[in-house]
Image (cartoon, rainbow, N blue to C red; front, side, top):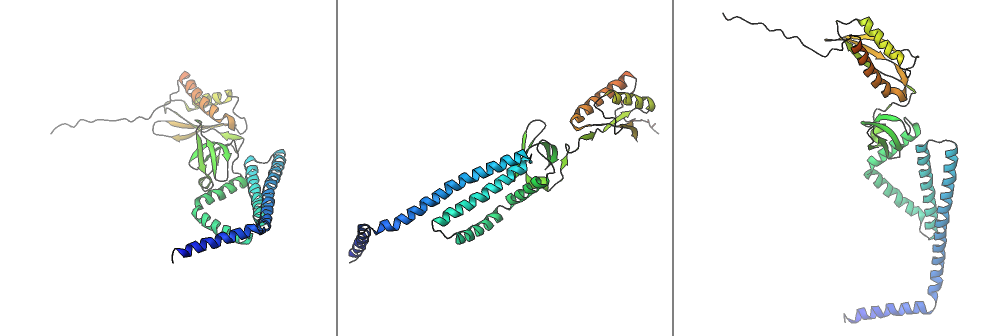
Length: 289
């Protein structure tokens, strides 16, 4: 009895299938589906081709207007993604899938994914702020996120720096925007700050004049603002001068290194000493009673 029931069910299914294909009704059922599938596929292909053309035209228009590279890439990515999403929805709707329910499911999934990827979303939000408000641009020398280097690329999730010794540093945008940003390239000029110490036995006026001669001999140093050379501190072992010339930002390190070397050489040639920390120790002998 139990063996006959499955055999009867199989026979019934086979009979229904034969009847379905025999009367030709399957053709009427499948033709509309295949038609909709072809139309959906055409919508997908043509839509993506049109989107590529639109994004390309907008990219060229932005480039002609000298848009910021990071902002341009970000806007094009957002635009392309949004348009592709619309095309995919149109193709799915052509297949008869209820897009309203699909959007509700995607919204719930998006909420769950957002909670799981809150750190990534924080980097995304910080990336948008960096791109929109532009505290620095590509090519600037910046100190941010606990490191310093030349900005090579800004994306919506991280920024890529190149260190002075040519290492690539990838920093999450949330660490950059959430902290202090020092942009050394933002201004066209910078001030070099040097501290030069001389002995208490040396002539301060002579030392000042010698340092002024070294400053005046360097053509990279700007005349306006005027260089400041002044006694800043009477330290334990030296009289400390500050030497503060202004230079173009590109000349900063070259001027700083050259001034330090030339001032030392000039002092040596003119009998001015740069003392090193020293301490006098006096010893007293105590006689035994």
